[in-house]
Length: 305
Image 1 (tube, rainbow, N blue to C red):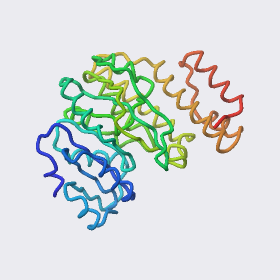
Image 2 (cartoon, helix red, strand yellow):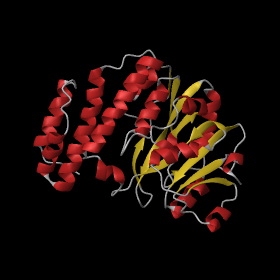
Image 3 (tube, rainbow, N blue to C red):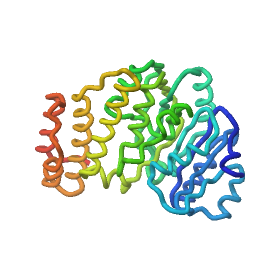
């Protein structure tokens, strides 16, 4: 089955960016309701023909050369011909009732731009280590953005967006180096139309203790991406949504990520590493006094894992 034939104007398509995890990808594919079309973008061509033969209903887009994660996300989404797109990672999981819940929500909210469903956080052993469930809300723009203005707490396997939104936003930004491409996309989507929050948990989002986030969050590159993210959303809000995104919000977003980096640096490399990370960052003076006090406290107090 070719990627182009994977869907034909259907309600929902599942776009899966994949990279070197065939065993986990197989589990994800087995957890997806076979009623819906699926495309896998194979970054680096790591999936062999035997794997593909075991999943004959799945479309595969092969990327012979390894591309950035955001580029792989875009290629997966571009290959799906469906009105709505959901994009799980290749190590995530769905539950038996997930797609019935998603379909019901889409049909009940035909004018929405984006949906945020509840999710579990799962570890390397499939243990549930956390849960996020939003209140049930359907909010017009910019009220939906206001709910996620500091960052989107939903996770990709539980985020469903309209294909028209993906095309209007020109996909996920490939300028980012280590983070924020997803937040940039999802936040701008909330400024384009109705945002629907659904409390039902539809997926398990896997977090690895030694994953890329844990390694990169205490870096200057991470903070540079955060600044790029907030500047892009700020510009989009003004030109495409008629919404004033204040500079103080940019500094609140930066401060939240700076604090997370300080904490990670102190846990992994010691107390002085937290101070070094803060010294390399720009100081977000326009953040609230409460946020600035929290940063000082985080620098002074011992880090707790």
